[in-house]
Image (cartoon, rainbow, N blue to C red; front, top):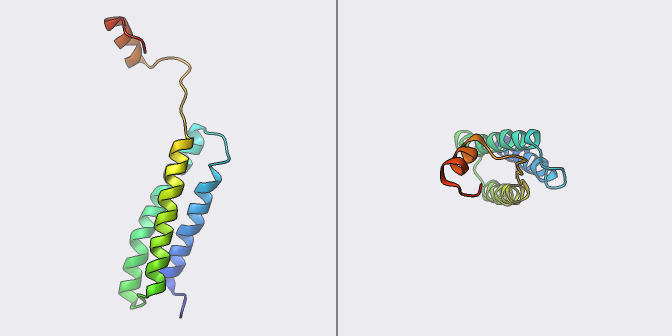
Amino acid sequence: MKFGLANQITLVRAALVAGLAVHLIQPATPTAASRIVIIAIVAALLDGLDGWVARRTGTVSAFGSRFDMETDAALILVLAAVAARQTVTRRRPSRAQAVLVEETGAQA
């Protein structure tokens, strides 16, 4: 079995997933959230690219297909865990919340 270009692209995606997992042990900050979004977008774009490359180069294989699916599953798992971990706390209500409180007397 040859570890072709499509599998190498999937390997890069797997490395990106590992990079996302690092955010599970780091503090939740706006900068970290921006990095997470950028990494996730790059991983999603590469997900489309690896299959296209495999089909175009004639290197489609059962291993490559499984490798791609497992990397997809790992990405979904890590993104779900990161999303659960990224909690945003506001020190003061937003302008919209403040207006709502003023107009309705409701709690923000």
